[in-house]
Image (tube, one colour):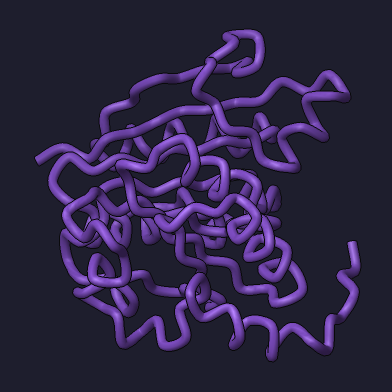
Amino acid sequence: MRLRNKPWADDFLREEDQIVVQAPFAQKGSWKHLFSHPEQPLHLEIGSGKGQFIAGMGVQHPEVNFIGIEFVKSVIVGAVKKVKDAETENVRMVNENAKDLTDLFEINEVDHIYLNFSDPWPKSKHEKRRLTFHTFLSQYEAVLKEEGRVTLKTDNKGLFEYSLVSFSEYGMILEDVSVDLHADEDPLNVPTEYEEKFSAKGQPIYRCTARFTT
């Protein structure tokens, strides 16, 4: 799907500096100081899209600080608006292509990582681009605290099955594995825009949480 260019996006992102982190790489090791409650756990969403998940999580979990990363300017502006409308102070957004999380975060700085409806890259030749490929897992392990967790949600069965194997082969412990999340009726689940769209069509939503071992 081709995204419409928003020429006003740069100005908008600069103006919303209470939500959008203007110099994210300079925050490495000190992200907690961006929040009014720096002692709270730090959770990270990679690929926040239009922001429904991270805005909802911010409201549902005021005891947690959240950072959402989204590279596409025409998409992140929608996420920033949702966070602003939610009137929550525990969410910050980053407009960067986080190729290596260790450039943004210090070792053991993050408590939890969310991967929501990431590109499945179904062709074998693109395996290294999947966000649950072992090179990405090593990045997550580096920035996460001991026994940190990664939660994946997807509508793509192939990516889900691949990720379960990848997590296991990396030595992670699988937790909370669901092959039909909405049938499980988890009252704490915060859906993304994609999740609502696919679920409305009868597509099962897959979710799992995997924990790194010490």
